[in-house]
Amino acid sequence: MKKIIFIVSLFLIGCVQTQIVSRKADGFTEKISKLYILVRGSDKAHPFFIAFTKSIVDDLSKRNIPSEVYYFDPLSLKTEKDLIERINTFNPNMVMHIDQTESRNTSSSYGWGSTNTGGTFDVKIFKPDSERPVWRANLQADASLGLETSAKKASQRLREKLIADGFLP
Image (cartoon, rainbow, N blue to C red; front, side):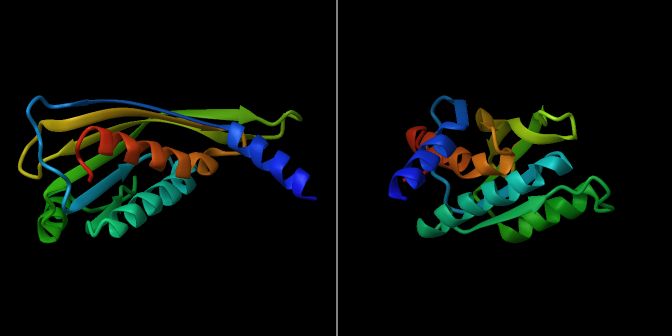
């Protein structure tokens, strides 16, 4: 029985691929001490974003870094002014934008529908009073069993990249 569980675990781990590349502004050395996260993506990727941002928020919380997440609703009646007010009320030292730029679907072998199994995300970090990002990354997450299964791995890779680039301790 243990052998079967081990083989299934290896199969599931092998089915998730995540890649991230980044660039940091020259000379920028400030660390994240309070982060506001803005998320914009397709409805089909929502399960990914829920798991992905929960993992990020949990990790930040363990590091005593407060954070808040806002998901853009395509039918929202809120104005940009409302959003800026929310961010200012939270008073973060940095704002992270996560925008889905691509979505990949896999059709079932029987031709009955498809599953969202991959996505590409543009991740940027800004100082709240600036329009120019201080950090930018391209994150690709793919999983054969659906995009939400890659969320934990993607958040781990993002965290590793933020540490390597000097944004997290």
